[in-house]
Each structure stands twice: as structure tokens, then as C-alpha cells.
Amino acid sequence: MQKIEYGNYAAEIDELGAQLTHLKNISDGFDYIWNNELWPKHAPILFPAIGRSNDDSYLIEGRKYSMPQHGFAADQEFDVVANDGQSVKLRLNSSNETKTMYPYDFVLDVTFSISDEGLKVQFNVENKTNGDMSYSLGYHPAFNIPIDDEGTFKDYHLDFNPMPSQLDKFEIVKKPNPYRSGNVLPVKDFDNNGIDLNYEMFDAGLVILTDKSLSSVEVSSKMSKHSIKVHFEDFDYLTLWTKEGAKAPFLCIEPFNGLPDVYGGLAELSTKEANHHLADGQEDNFSIDIELN
Image (cartoon, rainbow, N blue to C red):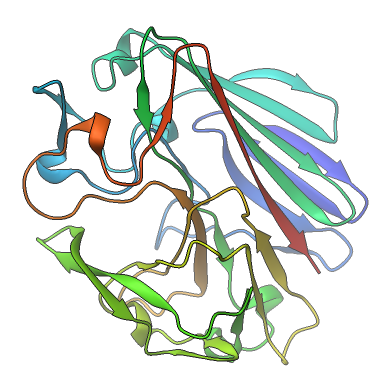
């Protein structure tokens, strides 16, 4: 387990999956990150796929490859490149195991840096294969809501920046696992002031917002002096989720570069909707800032 600390904040990152397991407010003695067996994860990294593929598979030039839900990065041991006490860099290299699922040579670096403002998470994806590499990358942190047990889940509110005049989402269907239907629906819980959190909005599962102009979202409550603001300018989509039917005290705020499959046949990876692409030798860099109060 890797630990970093600065000022009033401390974080712990598991080398397995480079997963953030704790993000603590030291002076007030609480954790922003979810830790409970009701949903036994904390902040998985989604790579090189987001969501579940049709038949848990996809195609590359007609050849079928199996792919776990959300890809395989969360189940891989990352190497620690450096840790100076305030920042830690972890690395996943392609291997014989990963190539059975995704036949590309790649390097995925994830760097966590803590400061007076909160936590920055930086992703660097490098294609080490000759030719195009198609991939998705997402981040899936679960935050304790209520924050520091102040109020209840339904006392919290989401503010978006920029605030749209209308907010739409991709329709989700369960077959029995969640897929996109291909349709877009309005977010009924949205008004011009944002969204008041409620459990019913997640009855159909995850809420993937379609508006690519969104750059940050803040969750706060009049019941709490604390708040969480996630900046995701480098990401195409924002997803919100909590465990359906559980009335669980957590909210996942998930920036996505990529999308789950539309229900139906197998997708060809090179033309998969919303995937990102890297030519051989090229790199992509994305960052997320988790601003804490």
C-alpha cells in the first residue's frame, strides 16, 4: 500500500489496480472514499474498456477477444515507479496475460499527487505497438455521501460547470447486465440549478450524461461544511452511480473517455463508438482534480 500526505489530506493507494482506497481529512478525522463490503471497491481504473461488452467480447479485424467488465487494469498489479511522500507514480505494462484479452503493447502510468486543495490523478497512456491502438479509459471513485456523516444522501446537491439549460443521458437497459439502448433521454431530476440527489434516479442503473461541455461537478449540502468538486476537463463524459436498490451512502462520480456497448452484436474495436485512438509511439495524457473542502 502506497501512502502520500500533505497538509490536511492523506491518501492510500493499493498497487493492485492502482486503486485509491482512502482519501482522508486529517483534522476532522474522516474519509472521503467509500469502504464497505456492500460494494467492495473504492476507485477502480477502467481500462482498456468501459462497461460490459456484448458477450463479454469484442472483435479486432474479425477475431474475437474476451474482455472483462471495465477491462482488466483494476485486477493487475502495478509497479511503483516513484513515491516522494506527496506524489506516487504507478505503472502497468502490457504482458502475456493482458495480450490474451487485448493484443497490444502499451504502458499505462497513473500518478497521484496530494496538495492543500485535494488530490490530482493523472493518466498517461502510451501505444508501444505498430499501428493504431483503440481504447477506453475511465475513473470510478466512490465518495461517502453524506460527507463526514453530516446529513443524509438526499440532503446533497450536484452543481455542474458550465450549468446546462438541459441535461440528457444515455438510456440504459439490463439484459440482465447494463448496456446502452442507443437512445437518449432527458434527466428528469435536473433543473437549472443542478440535481438534488435521490436514490430513485438510479433505479435503471448508471446515469451517463451526454453533454461533452461539462468540465466539473460539485457535491455539497447545507447540512455539511464539506464538499467535493471533481474537475474532468480532459474527459468526454460524466457518469453518476450508486448501487441500485441498496440506498447506499455513496456516490460514484466517474469521468469517461469511452462508452459501454449498445446492446446487440459484437463491436469491432477499431470503430467502437467513443473510443480513443493512439498511433504507434504516441501518448495521451488526462487528469482529474478532486478538490476537497
